[in-house]
Image (cartoon, rainbow, N blue to C red; front, side, top):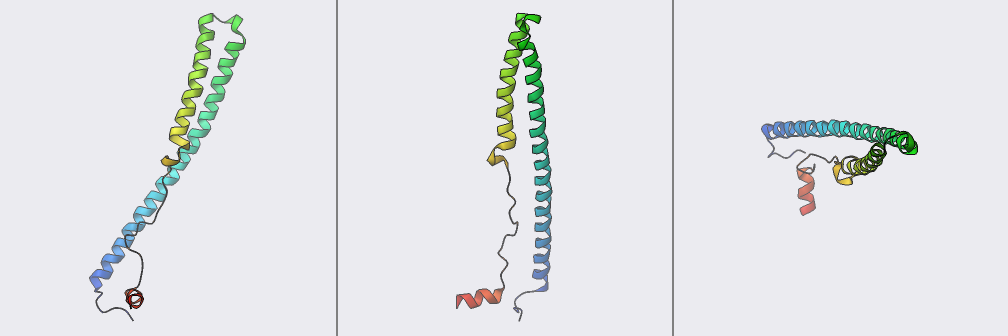
Length: 122
């Protein structure tokens, strides 16, 4: 039997609050999905970029007699800095556990029946 102290206005407010909490949860869920896709794309593109840099710098460094000394040194420096920079940026942006948001319920109050609370207190 429902409690007599709940008014229709309270029920309507509770329903509106629940609707808004669902909206917030759905919005966060959609944003998390988009961030996941972005992280995935960044990860794959960084691997492709790293492979391209390694190939270009490798060609220059292994054929060092065909290139000026400055170009060979620049290729070595570019390879080193690109690998280090890429690893650091991928770790900070994509792989760091703190960057991953965790979805959680948005409800402020536990969903319990007033009669259940009264019977547990007795």
